[in-house]
Image 1 (tube, rainbow, N blue to C red):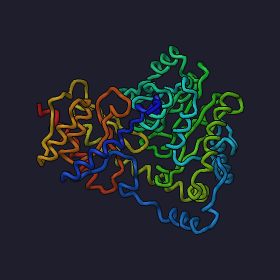
Image 2: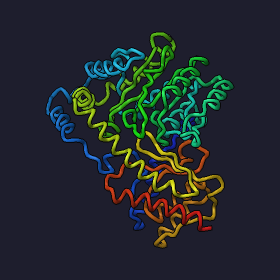
Image 3: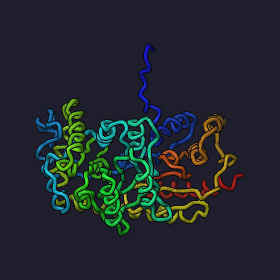
Image 4: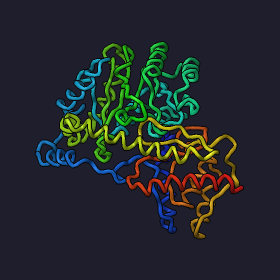
Length: 433
């Protein structure tokens, strides 16, 4: 073409969680039955919304007002409802004007990073959730900047690594954290969050905290929100209903902004994010209307507690099975609904394999493994051999080797079979060469 029309950051837009679907679908056509363990969709894995939540949504869908546009930042009454919840926690006190709705957090993340000055960088965790890392890298045109999460310390952030990278790179203007974390399931205690905020204060940065799994915590962990520790530091918390009701198809998320009035530049930046949303008029209305009715219902607390116990049981089940495999390292998650499995150093090589039935599937996967990371090689063989679709950890902006599984399967026998099959496949793979 006459001019180069490709954005400098286009090559950074990768999403391994979805990209592996294409490989799985090709194998499915070749006769492999797929067990989807790659994506965090509770509905796809058999979870049902409680009848009372469905009744609220159904009733709202019968009202004419839910079919129209709403205010660009979101329905005022819903934002006031959420502001009241935030303020009752203590800590930073927000108003409805500090809350902005988006069509899911993917929409929010795209705008948060897309409207930063290109030279302004946000450092995030490694392993990294792909939507964040890809959006940040794409806005800058360079690889995403990361600090380490330490698997030998329950996947807690390495604060020395974080501060050193900030200290010696003055392009870093923000710190990203995901709490509870995806893909590790780590939940950060108050003291650690306070130390991260202290680093942001020391170097005059802002903090972004993805809290989409804030109310899915267990195994003794407690939720601590960014609003409770942010103090006078500028910050943004990301929340939504996709994992919590759960209603991922609603595409309904929001941001909570802290201290924008204290920092003119930060306030101008938030205004640009809000103005970008204004160009779309507003976010989807029906899910917003549901929030005060669902979250404000006395039954919602019991709903959350039931789900916490459910995921705690599944986490413990998976840990009991996988922790017995000697060549891997597994940390028991305390939040979200994922588990990261790491191969110990030097375990994987480019000669290992698993048996694959069918000449077509075998030929296909042997072509796919050429030149890929060794953990991705294992993931491909696992997929072709057993049909289990997991995601390699190197796909999460990480140099360690491993994979992520979900804890969402509602069929108890199928879930246990999946975990046991993964454990057996790891042993066979490692011993194959």
